[in-house]
Image (cartoon, rainbow, N blue to C red):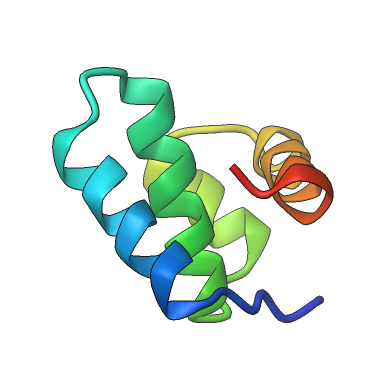
Length: 68
C-alpha cells in the first residue's frame, strides 16, 4: 500500500469538489483520494463507494500520474 501525500491546497480543493461538484464522478474521486490519504484500503474504499477495487486502483493511478 502506498501512502498518499497531498498538499493542503490539494486537500482543500478535494474537499471543495466533494461538497460542490455537480458531477457524482468528481465527488467520488475526491472522496476516494481523501479516504486513501487516511490509509483506507482500496477494498474498503470500493465498498464504501460501491465501486470495484480495480476502479479505485485506476483512480489512484490517475491521481499519482496527473493529480486532478
